Image (cartoon, rainbow, N blue to C red; front, side):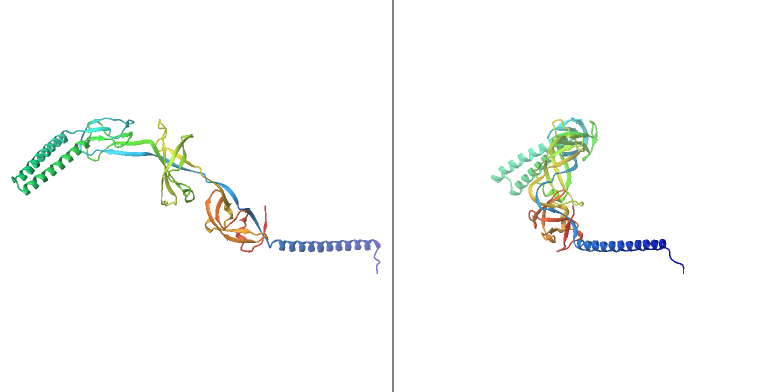
Length: 356
């Protein structure tokens, strides 16, 4: 049998030593992994969450809403009688006042008819007085007197109608405003209902827009707001809320109207785009972060962290909603710690750990 050399024995011992060291290292790593796994198992019993505290806040509820300026008054005047336009007294761009004559339709026939009805009325009036006196002395019967009085009433009605028709021949403005459109010239033949003039009153304008349900609760008729026009972004106008719709439209927004006084030189024009700036703040109200609500705001539920790091689901009553915070009317108190992230994994009694 061949004798093993000393050198070979040394090599064998070195290899065995290396193997022993590898086995010891593997065993050490296994023990360490087992310990880390045990720690992780303990840690994973707690759900990681973020919190915020209930506090007093000054809520900034300011917002902006866009719309289009419309005239305070807008009127299309049409002919009441058929005939030929004899005179036109105004032109496009002229300022007119209530009762001012704008045009005259030829009135020869109407004038003759008015005079005939006047004569007939005066005659009937004289006859009725004569019959009344005669009735007192027995000169006429009661039936004859009643007929005379009826003739007087008919003559009076015909006279009033003729006077109205004669008056309608003169087209008069019924508003203060500006002639925006003129559709007639002297000599034009018109029929009843023919459009003659378009008048607009832009001494004041209305800006119509819509607001949502959370914004309308802070609005009241008579509120003062600031307004800017798209073409005059640096100039502010003062507006008054004059109308708030009692019912939402199909988009669940509420139409409102704001009336604004125009400048002396009428800078604002109907049809321009404008923006209403609603400046609204509410001082020192109890609030919670909007993200605290479980599911959505409509659920009105939040998780509150207790001192022992467990959570409890609470029902609340919310109020005004701003961009980041929600007013709390009932259900929470100052300093309560509410969960704002990780609620999807929570239920009553869950243990939590905080993350930054």
